[in-house]
Image 1 (cartoon, rainbow, N blue to C red):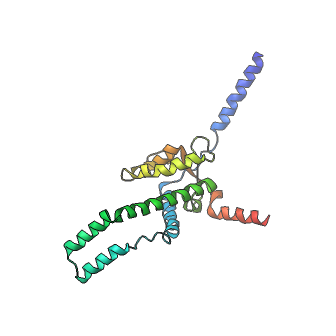
Image 2 (cartoon, rainbow, N blue to C red):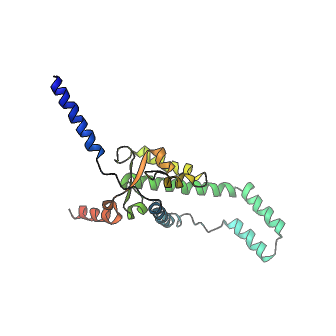
Image 3 (cartoon, rainbow, N blue to C red):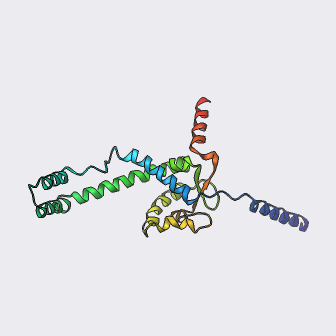
Length: 204
């Protein structure tokens, strides 16, 4: 029995050695994630703008500004009218509700993309995907939700949470740490490879 136990311990030690010799994943760089973010912003604008036009002012404010530009109302009356609209006619509440609705919609879209593809389109273009920081496998749905909420924490101190990856060995930002995730780069997970796999499945 002692011999068997001794052999078992040696096998376990050998297994541990093999696991530690596994190749280190390629972590995404700050520049790669910046480019991916810009691409995602472009995609989000294409999604959001048709439903929530950013540059369009409410009709009430447009009327006030037109009258002010025409000289029919003074600066004082224009300021009072804007103040009344924002704080007494629900203008400010309407603006806040619109921005919250946009944030909610984008949050749902981003989390669904993470769950289905482990990445947003911007990350997929560059072959990046989000994995569990301990196992290297696909994170849980809850981890994805925490990661998205962590964006707001990373952004609060002048974006320090995003720049934190510059000083982290595994290039993890604060939202990655909160969700226990890490972003890695794998050529087989590019958007083009994903489209190719989808086309092959359809042919079958």
